[in-house]
Amino acid sequence: MSLGKFGYYNPDKPLEDRITDIGPPHYEQFFPPIIKRNYGKWLYHEILEPGLIVHVSETGEKAYTVRVGGARLMSVQHIREICDIADKYCDGYVRWTTRNCIEFITDSEEKARELMKDLESRKFPKGSYKFPVGGTGCSITNIVHTQGWIHCHTPATDASGIVKSVHDALFDYFKTMKLPAKLRISLACCLNMCGAVHCSDIAILGVHRKPPMVDDEVLAKICEIPLVVAACPLGAIRPAKTEDGRKTVRVNQDRCMFCGNCYTMCAAMPLADKEGDGVAILAGGKISNRKTPPKFSKVIVPYIPNEPPRWPKVVDTIKKIVEVYAKDARKYERLGEWAERIGWEKFFEKTGIPFTEKSLDDYRLAYDTYRTTTHFKYTEHVWQLAKALEEAE
Ligand code: SF4
Ligand code: SF4
View (cartoon, rainbow, N blue to C red):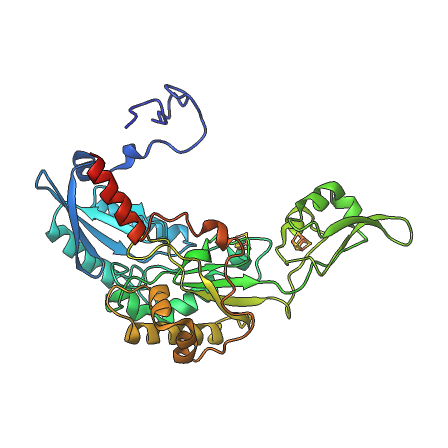
């Protein structure tokens, strides 16, 4: 591990010992003391109960981690409260997981259990948990999501609102570990997918269904036309002139895939539309290499209209999938593995989702990526090769 060159930060001398001022400070500075002392020495970990994990080191030390559901958007008061809790129980150390869970690490089980009791007792005025403990093992951990209507410019649906509605309906699966395996749900509010929903057990994806509108009045005044033309990944935009000779662009609607890239470059080409925008649901993806290779999620519901504030159809559809999976899958079987074992035909039958010509749309470059996995089969050919090598030695 580097000790100095790569980002140790001294606020009095910000450039001291730095070969670059780009990037975050080295993570080692932020390790809780127990993690620093045992770095590289961990033997194993166990989940003692939902939300409580113990890591055991070869030095005999044990680190107890309490995992808590977080939110993608947090108020300053909420973050201050998290910091106060970290000061009280963890010497000021706290960490966030990639799924926006908050983890408090302590050096004794007693402290961890006291902390859990404290966390569970903190409620919002209406009675909901401020810091729900859970999200470990065979559960639905925090649902990750992108920015949604609140922040980004190209969303086809909201992010925080829809995720809150779905997770409220599935909250019991966050607090327990009764699913056959872990279940990851993610949301991206447009198909640029900065939420990486292409490999989640269940994915909610905002979809536009109409091409951008072109505002001829202002386009030439506020947009770089060559830039807009170059921005389209499908070459669907060409320069044009209006009848009265003003510069503008035209969109080949048959080519457009409604990605919104042109709108990123040019505010005169909006594509958000009340009737066109909505949500698609995908299922069966995973990143893990365990048991079976990683899988892309597949389209199972091509379109559900936006229904704020509680998105009832999206919630009902996802709840049904989770309930059928929980009942029907074998222990340790991820959702995609279960669907492949019983057959996708059965998946549609059991979940009651109609099968259409738009379902099961797979990644278009799947053929190129089939062999990028570390998994392989011990075929007769491989056994023969291994035998020949053995004999040659
Ligand atoms: Fe913006 Fe798309 Fe990311 Fe949503 S998924 S935040 S719309 S880029
Ligand atoms: Fe091209 Fe995407 Fe704009 Fe359609 S929405 S014109 S595909 S950049």
